[in-house]
Image 1 (cartoon, rainbow, N blue to C red):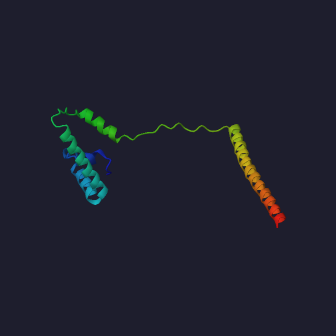
Image 2: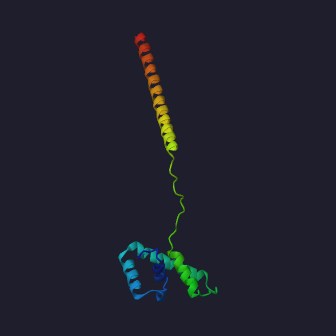
Image 3: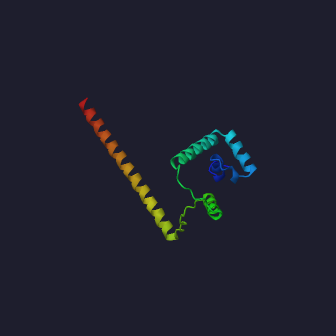
Length: 134
């Protein structure tokens, strides 16, 4: 069992009647054996105590069995991210992408070559000028 399980939270806030003896034992073993789980249980207990204090005097309506089941089912449902599937590229798109990539690399290499040859020419000019001075 993990600490994000609603049964772990139920145990932490003292709703033990909702748990089987095996679930209670499993949660208690987790809390005893894992410092992070114990800290999370303590934090949940503090939050529950604060809410009880803040909401003192409020009338709580009990959940119906059907509503409680829906809430528990919703907390156990996994969040699904809707990512559209990637569309396969056509052969023409693949060729055009490869050509574009080659052009970008060619321009980059050309720019580097131009900068290096310009710097080399400048260095030769400096060397010639320095040679004339001496």
